[in-house]
Image (cartoon, rainbow, N blue to C red; front, side, top):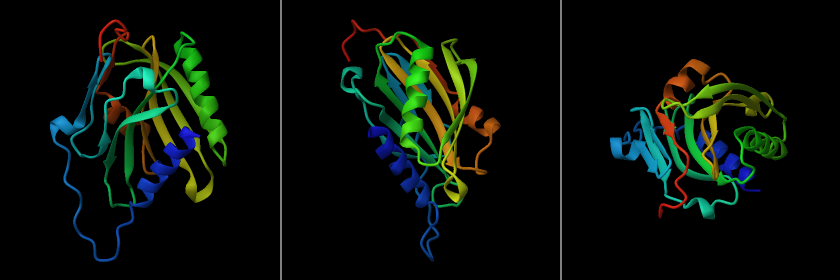
Length: 192
């Protein structure tokens, strides 16, 4: 259920991409501090052209389902709007592949128009093993394209993704926008 609410919120943000008649202002761009997410096991800096939608710190013990911790918008108020989101969930299966399988199954069960994913082995900028995903979901005008880095840090499955309506995002752009992520094994003995 949480994935469905998350996807509905994402689609709602994309629906806001069409501004009301006469609207000419756009939201202010995020500062460097608003573009940076840090916790004990990961670091990410969003690209300079983003607007902060929301950011929060969530202890991994509280994330029993996929939990968004940071969301940024790009080209908000335009038909070509994109969304970058950073989410995680507590995961005890013990492997990157196990988390990937769980994540894709959750996406497929939440999608009404089918979900198709292509996976490649990847690494984050500091060498953390990850998968690079290309995901298409929905159908017709509601089709959404997502690109994501997915990794497992020992206690959480983490997803850093960029989503947009199909045709409004390229893989090259998504890789550039998501390139600022690094992660390490979660230090479970360290207080949050």
